[in-house]
Amino acid sequence: MECDLGLFGIGVMGQNLALNFQRNGYSISVYNRTTEKTKKFVSQHPEITGTYTLQQFIDSLRRPKQILLMVTAGTAVDATLRDLDKSLAKGDLIIDGGNSFFRDTDRRFTQFSEKGIHYLGIGISGGEEGALKGPCMMAGGSRTGYDQIVSILTDAAAKAEGPCCQFLGPRGAGHYVKMVHNGIEYAVIQIIAEAYDLLSRCARLNANQIRDIFAEWNSAELNSFLMEIATKVLEKVDPETRTPIVSLILDSAKQKGTGKWTSQNSMDLGIPTPTIDAAVAARNISALKAERAAAARLYSSTPLKIGSSFVEQLRDAVQASIIVSYAQGFHLMRAASTEYEYSLPMIEIARIWKGGCIIRAKLLDSIKQSFMNDENVRNLIVAPQIVKVLSELDQNWRAVVKFAKGQAIPIPAISASLDYLDGYKSERLPANFVQALRDYFGAHGYERIDRSGVFHTDWKLDH
Image (cartoon, rainbow, N blue to C red; front, side, top):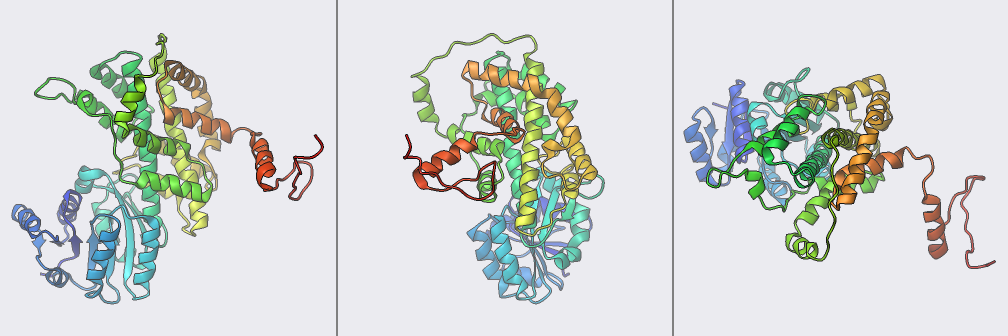
């Protein structure tokens, strides 16, 4: 039997996607460079066709061939594409479902388009469970290729006001949106972690007490997948020590690079994403465990007393910071949409993020509505309903930042979010002084507020 779709790479995500597609009525063949992994998988799931050579894999597919790659981003994708290229023909379709850098997807799209082979880069979010039960899929590349396989993708996707799968634009548009999705994910995780830290170190609450607070937050405006799993993490107990597992985990976090890419690209485009940047930096500094431990012995601080309304204040600070994180991500996508000619549909991005993906949240209802009210709004923090909410949260947000600074407890993401808002809504900033200094030592020139043109001052004369 010739199969509808071939899946190259059967790690956990690949396996679960294969089962998802098959459950939705499609015939699936799989191939993995490690033969034993393929044998084990198909022995457990005989409804999936296993193949053991690349040619056998290609031959197992009907024309036009449709192949989904689930391999590690980077050189492994290029190596796989070189192998597949020899066996593909005009009209066939390749889908990269990994976390590839959008520039690589741009390049690969062009490379295969010249041969008449359709190429899609699809950002897939939802983790292992999402892959099995219904992920969010952000597609970019060949529109013809997408239309060719759309029924398979949408049947397997999560559902929220329709399938959480959408064609978002040409070339690397899908992977670009997934990159920003992951940047927002970094920010929200860091914000929740900072709330946990303040409740643990300042309020002296244990894991169960913090879990109850997070569960209450999750029942209202802060409802989201990440807040939901935060409660589950806090309630998990180590069977041997009877201690919450979270308290036994080394405080040194890793990253796979997508958050860093978001920060790097934001700087390329000149669009500030300080909350995302702070989250990336927080992971980097957490990795310096030995250095941090040594520095901690050199400093001391005097604890402050927390007020009775601290939990409420913290809830508002978390909500405001998360709103700002999403606003930064959408602001960046707006700029990228123009710069890279992606024509990203903001309303649809907000919609598909409501289901399946890691950053699905109640907040996306307000974001979607804000874009429906004004599709051209450049930054969500000036959308009327967002302005109203942030204004209501403002004082408690500031109180938390002030308190944390007094306690010498770092809250880089929450603090950066507030600084971002204050900067964006400041009619005047000290950049005039920055420009004067740059002109002094580098003759970079500056603009004036009272006349047009570029000026330079000889600052060393007329003292």
